[in-house]
Length: 334
Ligand SMILES: Cc1cc2nc3c(=O)[nH]c(=O)nc-3n(C[C@H](O)[C@H](O)[C@H](O)COP(=O)(O)O)c2cc1C
Ligand SMILES: CCCCCCC(=O)C(=O)O
Image (spheres, rainbow, N blue to C red):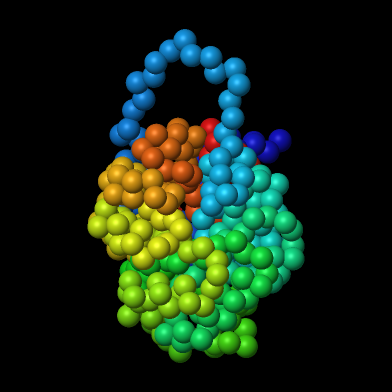
């Protein structure tokens, strides 16, 4: 009889068995020495509890709200690219799991099911994650499509002026943009990459991502959408204050799962400074290394409104499709 995984590390093992090495390496890897990758998880382990006792815990309610939406627990699904590399149903399976778990799914703009396909697949609460492209018209069309299909917020990722140096992807000549196609771009922009060397993902990203993106562009983004905007990739009090000043609706403390700049601090270690700088004016969320309910509890205790999980979703999806995502969401609650 097959053994039921009981935690996210066991799901990771199953994902490793299920996936071709190139895709497993893409999902699991971080940038360069992967120092921050390890630290994202280990920094949680260094925070210990000193519990008081004899409190009535017979009735526990894990539910919370994010931007006014009710969630069954404070664990959302982070945007991650290309779910069809993990499972043929791709982001549709993930969205159905989000609906079943009553949580928010943030759809990556580099998804393998379109914004529209995901929207019509179920009634999950969906946010749309945006990269800003050199072709601003492509970014605006994606935002407008998301708005038309009922996505509730735009999550602007600000830590990716280029894709980080992921050495496994370089060795594997990671070919994610071509197989399968990045369907949101169909009819808008070519996803073909003319490069024989290294990571094709990196080459593709350098061609299309706009490295000039800066604070003034928040005004541009606000001018093309009525949706609330969250900024994903804040790691300092200074940037948190700027985010409040430009009028965004929320902040995600994130180092992109340690896939961008290596040697950034683990996210849990900077959460408190960001929360203090924001002073309760907007919600602060966190992702990076969240693998257990105790991690979630630590993030909430340090001021996060909720957390997001990235790789755990991909491991669940690769291992068992929609049911695997549901199980990983449950396991992240502890
Ligand atoms: C395979 C993979 C793909 C990702 N793709 C995106 C993306 O398209 N957009 C984005 O903003 N973040 C992306 N991320 C980063 C996640 O949103 C999130 O910040 C990170 O995975 C959280 O860390 P965790 O994996 O330790 O939970 C990706 C992460 C992974 C692992
Ligand atoms: C626009 C191409 C870049 C896709 C990067 C996906 C991502 O964020 C990740 O792999 O991490």
